[in-house]
Every structure is written in C-alpha cells, then in structure tokens.
Image (cartoon, helix red, strand yellow):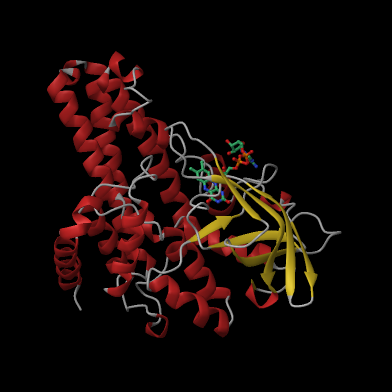
Length: 382
Ligand SMILES: Cc1cc2nc3c(=O)[nH]c(=O)nc-3n(C[C@H](O)[C@H](O)[C@H](O)COP(=O)(O)OP(=O)(O)OC[C@H]3O[C@@H](n4cnc5c(N)ncnc54)[C@H](O)[C@@H]3O)c2cc1C
C-alpha cells in the first residue's frame, strides 16, 4: 500500500470513528487533560484495536499490521490532525510492546501482545523511585523469589496512569547484595492484587496523571520476568529507547495546532504588535519548521528503525520547543494568565504552560539527553 493510500485510509477511518459516541472524546485526554473521559477513552482503545490500528509494524500473529516507519508517522500525524483523544494505551503500545517483541519469550508475546493490540490491557511504567529517576541504577524496590513467584516490596513514584492500569512493568532488585546496574530484573506485575497501593499525586495543572505506587509483598510470576534474572538493566534501557521513538516524530501536527492557536490569540488581543513577542512567535514558527525538516531527514535516513541517538536528538528538540511555546502562550495572554477560574479552572494557555514544564523531565531529562548526545554522538569526554 502506498503512503498516500495509507493516509487516506486512516484519515477516512478517523473521520467516521470520531462521530456518534466518540465525538465527545475529541480533544480530550491531552497533556494536562489526562483526567478527562477515562471510560470513553478506554472504550476508544478497544475500538482502535478492533479496527487494527494498534501495533502498526508488529507481526500479524499478535494482532499487528504491516506498516513502514513512514506509515507509522503518518498514523500519528492523522491522529493528531483529527483531534483524536489522548491515548490511554500509549505505554502499552509504545513501550511494553516493543520491549516484549525484542526481549520477551514466545509465551510472553502470545500472552500479552494480543491484549495490547486489542486495546484490552492498559500498562504503566514502574521505573522511577524517590531515589532513582535519571539514575535508575539506584533502584531499591526488591523482589525475592519464592517458588514460582517473586514477592515485591518497595515504592515507585511518578507512575503515569497507575490508577487506571491493569499491569505495570517494574524494574526491581532481585539480587539483594547487588548495586548499580547489576542484579536488577524486569517484572510484569498485575495491578489488581493485594499488596499494590496507588496514591495519586496532584500536579501543577491541578489534575493527576501520575501516582505513587507501593508494593507490599505483591507478587509477580517468575514466568513473567522479561530477560534473565539480574539482567533487567538491558531490558529497561531497551524500553527507554522506544520511549523516545517514533511517536515523537508524528507530533508535529499537534504542535502546529498549538502554535496556530497562540498566533491567533496574539492577533486577536494585539500581542502581535509587541516586537519582542512577535520575534518569539517567529522563532517558534522557525523552530517547528526545523523540527519538521529534521523529522523528514531522519525518516529518509532511518530505514525501518530509529537509533536511540536520533531519538535523543528529537526528544531534546521537541521538549524544549514545546516548553518555550507554553511560556510564550501565557506571555501572549498577558497579566490575565496569572488568574485562574473558580476551583483552579485553567484555560488552554495555562494548562499548556504548566504541563509543558514536564516535557523536559520525563522520558529522560534534557540534561540526560545532552549527556547522551555529547558522549555517544560527538565523542566528547565524560
Ligand atoms: C509527567 C511525568 C510523567 C512521568 N511518568 C513516569 C512513569 O510513568 N513511570 C516512571 O517510572 N517515571 C515517570 N516519570 C519520572 C521521570 O522519568 C523522572 O522524573 C525523570 O527520569 C527524572 O528523574 P528525577 O525526577 O528523579 O530527577 P533527578 O534524576 O533527581 O534529576 C534532577 C535534575 O538533575 C539533573 N541530572 C540528574 N543526573 C544528571 C547527570 N548525570 N548529568 C546532568 N544532569 C543530571 C536532571 O536532568 C534534572 O534536571 C514521569 C515524570 C513526569 C514529570
């Protein structure tokens, strides 16, 4: 199928699918709006799954569908263009799925992947801990093997969607005497069991996308460990590479809509006449064009996959750009942007400004991306 045919197919499908009950889901669940329409968005995942739009490029035996890298990006572009709802299944599809395809056993793939491509299972990512964020080698949550189970004790933090997730992929220490990267294992843990407590954390936006998760003798089956015992670091690093991967290349359309909204607001309230603001709007426009061209260049040179390095460059670019646009959005609003409505009700510019502070932190902070680029791409000394 040509890229044009693929685009026409997904565009047509979205147009039709986002009518009827799903019309209400349009525009919901984006950054800072993750609390919206959970039930409907869960049903939307299943709807996407039934139509075969989850697991593009995955083997068909797991419910996937053949698609080139360019087509995957086209999917994300059209998805954003249609204003389709924020995905509850993004970690399932973008992080855990590729990790299982790369490191999972045949049984694990057969058990978990079809439930992702059907939109049935929602996954969350249990990496970060109070003492282990950028430096994941500091993970302290421990898992002790008892027969055919691991018994898990410890705390995770900033776990997005844990309050809605069915499963969590958890990085924990299985070798009690180990330190740093050694002795870690990657376990697939059901969330609905005694011993798992999820506590929401309220974010700057007033809503809560992420949580603290406490494991108090929770269990995971030994057969649900991905990779060898003690070799979870390699698997976890694989997942992080996917986190900065292809979906970020398809974000341009969503960014363009946000930029257009800021420009339109600047026209309507006269902020456009301020030379300093106008300069920043022009800079934002140029920044987006640069991102678009580097995405096209990456696609042209990437063959069928993106390397971690390319993904780091793109993460650094888009996170910085979107955070600056958030700052510009409130500056264009002017002093009124300092006020909220009753009950801390935020408008689009305020939500964008506050949530985009997180862009340069999650998925590997800007500083960490710069370290990776400096050491591995530019060959600078550590
Ligand atoms: C919205 C959001 C959602 C998230 N969702 C999840 C999730 O679902 N699952 C999950 O496991 N985690 C999640 N996280 C956590 C995220 O991955 C971590 O916040 C991130 O890795 C940074 O870790 P930290 O917060 O511990 O900061 P720290 O690692 O303590 O870093 C603090 C500062 O020091 C800098 N720094 C640290 N080390 C270095 C270094 N070696 N060189 C230079 N600078 C350095 C950092 O860049 C940062 O600016 C989420 C975070 C956010 C904001």
